[in-house]
Image (cartoon, rainbow, N blue to C red; front, side, top):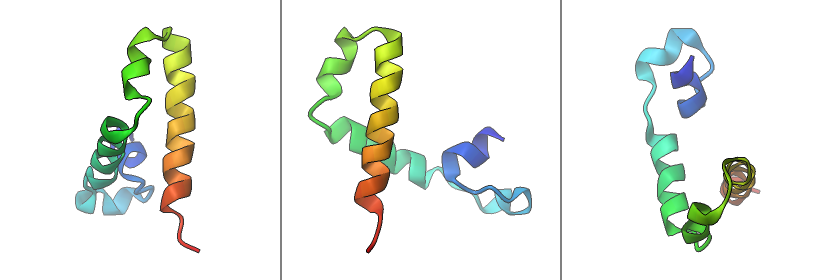
Length: 65
């Protein structure tokens, strides 16, 4: 199931075609984000909240239309 969450592929029958391309793209986005240096100074709860927001921001930037 972890593979489904990382790849966005929810169909179990298609897991053999799953890649980590989406997860890799998000990690690259995080590395390029100017806020990355600030994450080391935050508490674990705040890191989680910040990553949740950055996930939302990333997904919004990828929407077409």
